[in-house]
Image (cartoon, rainbow, N blue to C red):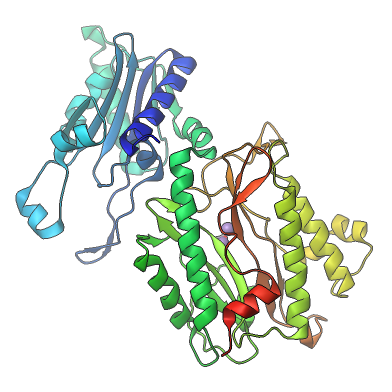
Length: 440
Ligand code: GLY
Ligand code: MN
Ligand code: MN
């Protein structure tokens, strides 16, 4: 397997090749994210920009990658912070340009303080500039200043790029199909998150607050070297399970509640995204089991529908059909099935899509539709499969189904002949879930 440095250099070469095909060459510039102040002199935990990291593997803020494709050859250039013994004493290690150049496989590296001075030369006589447009206001201003500076030099004989291309389009297409390096990290992210859900099932109990379960998830993530959650953990008990992006995680859980947990770690820049729903006291009631088994049947049918060559949209239709028929059977909506699908009456209880791309971002880069057609699945694409039902009390809902919310979510890679389930080790059938809960 290639080492990380070769992997990132290979991705930069692929972007350069795409630039040559599109415009015969040019300059690509991609900045990483800025540090953000949380309050006074504290910053939020730093998270690199996903596009920048995809191309570099470089973890520090205040960095820009520049890729030159021209007749004299390619140049891979990094701008980054200089070494700074005093700041390193307070805030920690910085690579500095010299070490970064060698370790991250660049041809050149320069101090970030040189960027504005050097960019006009980089951008002169290039047919096209490839950079994000409208992603960061500061960056847009910097790009505009660079182009104006190049134009101001036209009497010296240089030309400014004719074309500005949002580089994210090409990178989104590249990111949609994961390479072996990415899949290895995503397997690990999935395995850690799976263990976290197992731990939550084993430990949650009536009388705990939701945040106590969130702490169990965080424990498992950090203990296994995941640096962060991929998104804020949703720990939603009882009626909160019907709030799709529930955030408070502060309810006291009662005997008889279901607990919906949507939580996944980020491991070395890659997300996982698992949902499981289980009874806080360890045993499903009859109506809870009816709803759970229906969502499970939909999820299993969706997993069966994911394979190479089929449109992304197909498994969403599978979820709608199975859930709508089940809702008719439970007498929560009226049949027949075709009428329910046509009217969308099931959307009262199932109002989201069955999944999304997954990668460095939890709702990852990549188009779902191109020229009006659903994207076709290919080996290496990673997506979630996550049907659910959310039965809010009121409006004719029978009391025994009131406030039951269930979602079941796995992360899968499309393979040559089907899928690899990255989170398949997480208890899922009623018997598996009750066994994982154990005796309270
Ligand atoms: N956790 C976000 C989602 O499932 O889409
Ligand atoms: Mn999720
Ligand atoms: Mn998801």
